Length: 189
Ligand SMILES: Cc1cc2nc3c(=O)[nH]c(=O)nc-3n(C[C@H](O)[C@H](O)[C@H](O)COP(=O)(O)O)c2cc1C
Image (cartoon, rainbow, N blue to C red; front, side):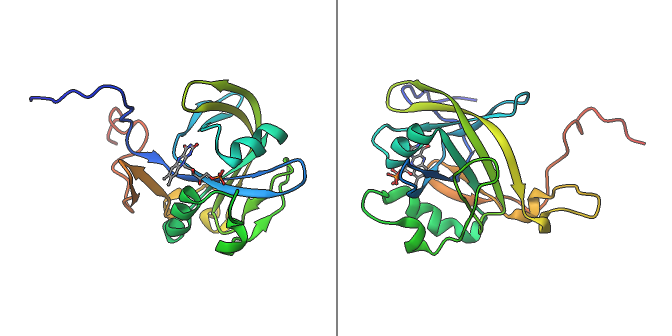
């Protein structure tokens, strides 16, 4: 098959889109949208987010070295977009969008109650890369809505109706998985 080659951009698609809450030294809370986020280590559990230095969130997170990653469900997608185009420098996005904040458990930063999953993080390193600074952070707690758990305590993320981001557009996930981890090699009984 013929292919057209592109240079100078990153075409990793799709990616998650998340809401990141942060707090500054004075206790002001902000939220912004992040698509450049990823899991980077299992033990210790670590995550990364890349932030442009001009974002207010960059200032807040650099000050207190804590943040919360809030996974939005599809019904929140308009609010997700808003948090990605408006800066906390000009508007209190949390108040404007009517988000409910839950106090942090292992961090001082609150999480967004409307998001079914909240991941509390403590920054380990801030690495300047160019347009963005890479924040690597240890996950100190994951909070999951009880209605995503079955009676055995298994988490059903498919019930959370999470959002993917691909080439500038927001997508919902299919309700049914294409397969399970390892299904390609699993022997049929
Ligand atoms: C879908 C989407 C994804 C985004 N991903 C990032 C990102 O990964 N890193 C970043 O620095 N900005 C990202 N942005 C832009 C910021 O969210 C945006 O500039 C926001 O207004 C910054 O808010 P703040 O100044 O209150 O921190 C994204 C925006 C959108 C809409």
